[in-house]
Image (cartoon, rainbow, N blue to C red):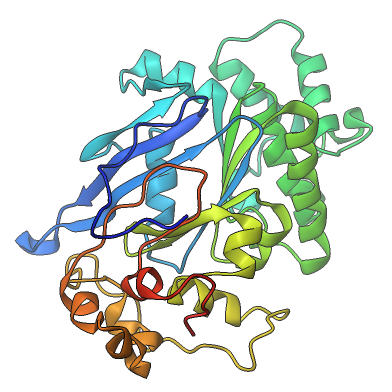
Length: 346
């Protein structure tokens, strides 16, 4: 069910049972030379449930990495809050240390994430040592490597990163996260630097960890094709806001937002006759357009369909309600909200 821009209620509280969530989250950075601030995250509500994989999708510069870093406590929100297991995240050193044992980051570039002077054993054991977990260290490291698909694990203990393939390095990074038995991982473009032949293996590994361990994950990506292969739910982000969110089958087979449709149209398996080409680059986050923030690039507005529906002025002048944290499909688009149900708005 989509949400009416005119009758939208205030954003819902964080859903019960969420493992990690953003609640009315804003993150601003100072402008250059006294200029206006850049609002990288602009009123986001998003949650991840235990055992769920959520894909956060959007172009470079849309704010998705800032949102991920804020969820992990690496950035402090300007306003709003991050909750973990229903409790607000604390920013004292002790609170953050305890939180980061249960919420782990997997970076895009495994080569950059691994110290070239450290063996695989040292790389995986580092988290245990930071958190003062001395008991059964070799067994814990071996178990993490095994769960990450590096078997027999002892064979990898004394290897260095340069002796591994790209896929093996990424598995070491994942093992370094798993060794602390986290409840959620946040993976920023986890397969972007890997060969196509290896990507499927890493995605299959993440799904196996979800199935075997109940591990929740937020996967940050620009690739909706990746979301189709791995996610339970998809959130599409544009210029600091979630503009469409819902179950993967709904969002990727019947997208309502023109931005989502454009992202899908360029996939190799897309059924569109030709890709939807968006004009220009995403706007500067220090100068967010009035009305719908996507309207300067919107092909549906340019086609005249918004005029036919009588919402063109709203597209250019009326902001849209912030989407709530909900499992129901939602879209922030004047045209989509005005179209008859089931109508494709291309």
